[in-house]
Amino acid sequence: MSRGQESGKVRTMTDVTDAEVEAIDLAVVAYLDEGDWHVADLPERSLDDVDTICRELRRYPGETGALALVAVDEDFVLLIRAQGSTVRVLISDASAATDWPIARSAVDHLGVHVDLDDEDQVPAGDLGIVADMGFAAAEMGELLDDWDLLPEDVLSEIADQLGFGAEFDALVGLAD
Image (tube, rainbow, N blue to C red; front, side):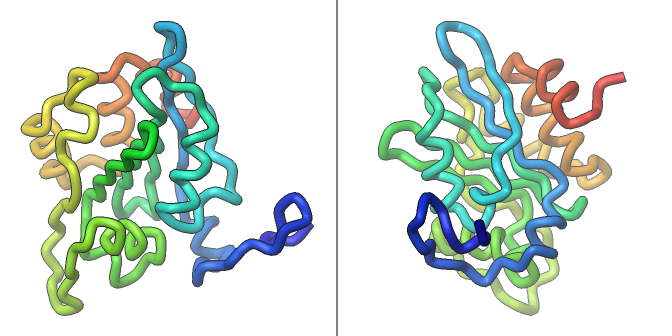
């Protein structure tokens, strides 16, 4: 089945190429079900844009919604949380939208204007995306300000703070 087909239906394609999907270092879904955290890889077919990721997230039974943790080309992180009809998005570097369609879909979803000449790495979106789960917006801001951390390390720290760090690290190969 081609990338453009699912269950016999032709899917509208974005401008995401196979190479851009391959540049996604990791894409994980995490959700809390009956008091236990579950983590799994997000399927490649769901990584075209924020809307496609949201549709995938809604398939998971999380009590607090489902959370996508995405790292792209050792460049930026993208968090997307779908909880019922509510979608919350956080991107660590809005300027990545000039180079990456998935980042562009995030800033478009947020309604953020990105200046093509702006080279400052500034997060955009909801810093409090997981504040109700114990990781405050101020802490998230501090974490995203640490440019010495690789994106997968940022996501590992978020996972650890939320209580599924060991599972996340094992899934993505960061465990010792």
